[in-house]
Length: 115
Length: 112
Image 1: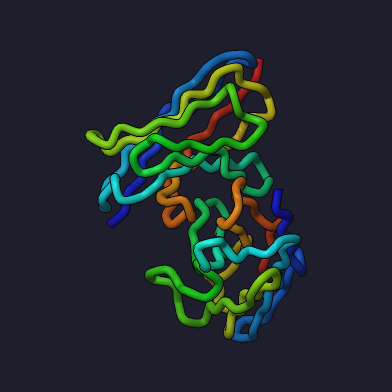
Image 2: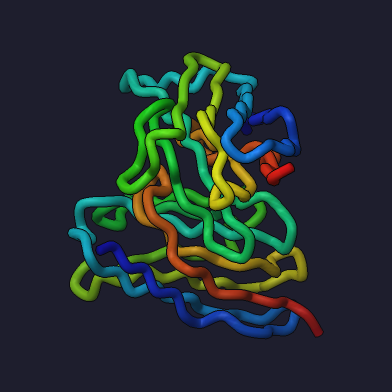
């Protein structure tokens, strides 16, 4: 059974940093790209970033380029998202998602950016 | 960015009756590799999203066969043959052909 367990969310002040992690199990982690998708309260999901199987290729939406960094550790089956210079509009539930086509979603972790 | 437009945005359906959701993209979703990466996502109240259908018509594991997808190019449809209480959810179409991946506005399905 695929399991994706996110951690690291919480309350952070505008301009602050936060690192999200995702522990993946139940599938061969190195077989697939991975993604982070966020969903602001009452809004449509938004795929923030994707990373290739080996980690050598990454994509970001324009609003987070230069502020967010996606990475993966294939030896530990973990996916990470380093978020810097956080803004109020980054407030959302962040989901770790298997595959570049969003096959399976984790339970999500809430990130709140507020003073 | 590819714009995905769904209709209707809400649907009230009698139990056991069919439901249909339309999704249109403003660009072709046919990838250079040949596949069409149009998915349907279900989000039940208070739950994480879940993919139901991928590449237009393929059901994910565990998805009941009352859900079906169809379409091509820029026009796609999700059909529920007989709506059940557990189908109350918001349904999103999304495209994974072009970066960034984009979602429709969502269609809320409720029981009449």
